[in-house]
Amino acid sequence: MTERLYYADSHLVEFEARVVAVSQAEGGRAAVSLDRTAFYPTGGGQPTDTGTLGAARVVECVDEEDRVLHVCEGEIPSEGANVLGRVDWPRRLDHIQQHTGQHILSQAFVELYGAQTRSFRMMEEVCEVDVELADPSDEKVYGAVRRANEIIWDDRPVRIHQVTPEEASRLPLRKDSAREGELRVIEIEGFDFSPCGGTHARSTGEVGCVVARHWERAKGLVRVTFAAGVRAVEDYGRANRTARATAALFSVGREEGTEAAARLQEENKQLQRRLRAAEETAARAEARELYEEAAASSEGGSAVVVARAFEGPDAEGLRRLAHALAAHARCVALLGSVEGGAARLVFARAADAPGDMNALMRAACQTLGGRGGGRPEMAQGGGQHAERLAEVLDAAAASARG
Ligand SMILES: [Zn+2]
Image (cartoon, rainbow, N blue to C red; front, side, top):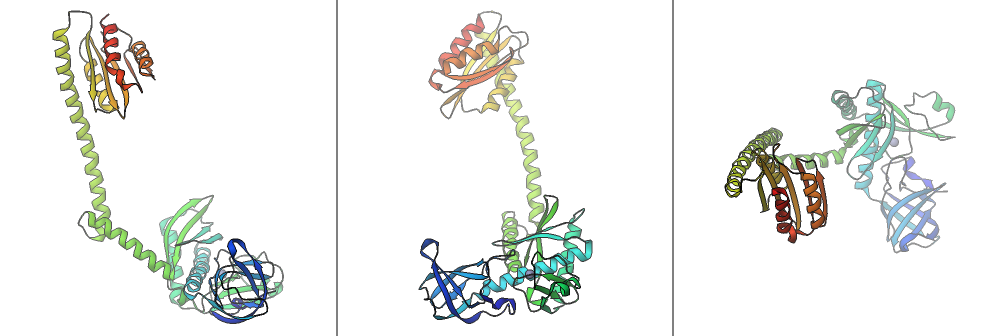
């Protein structure tokens, strides 16, 4: 059994202990168990501590029944040796701030809205709580954050109590504990009692501040992404850099970046509309030219056939031109283009022109080694044999002229 020194003192980061056992772990590492430890093992939503044991590096600590295993790299101490353990303080402080910040934020949700916290996760940069919050809104979430910061800035004492189940039943615990026997209860003076095995601040001021970055509905609960203390400051730094970089793109101040981006988006929409209108006009002009050329050389048959292969236009451009051509009397438009080594076809005819575009398309696509089809007035398709595009258009034109 490992005596857990962090239960009594979250700020103890240097301790002496005796090595009780050493066993092999994965990847050439060793798992060291001690008679006592200040290292917090992964659990309860809080990640592991790291640090050193003598000359060995502690990369992870895990709970194994009543022991804490210290997964170590480097010079592993031998069984029976006395070692000096050192917990990485910046990491421990970060965990203290997030963990205590979570107690405070969770109780703020209870106090203001009767909303219990169902789960808590500490991630790489931020933390999450899932709260039973009805009718969530920015106002409610930021209201709880405001209340949590009031408690933090009150600098209220945080106390650790070891209590029996009977004593625990008389305390106004925020949540029930699944544990049996003696219970560790964390009290935030005049605000919160929670059973918890984690590491906490001495007083709420040590948490610094709590900020909420985001909230969303998740599985019937409200997931609030938050950060406390050092993380809040770092998150502010990231958010500030992003906001400033965005604003700099528009040569405006930080607070005007969003408005400038929205303006650009609106301008872009209008330009898109104008571009589409200009493309329609251009397609109509091009269609008229192609139609007049074809009509002049047609031999007075029942159809005016425009068969043409283009370089470049995309599917939309080809369709637009085919539609514009089909607006002319007796016109049959047989258009093709090559893009990325593949041939694309659009066939269309005027209502008063003869021919079945669907049938022409199917025959053309067979030659191109592809697929296509449509209606008698309009069909689309394509195939891989781009080198046969001219041949295919000639054959379709011959069919269309009857
Ligand atoms: Zn806790």
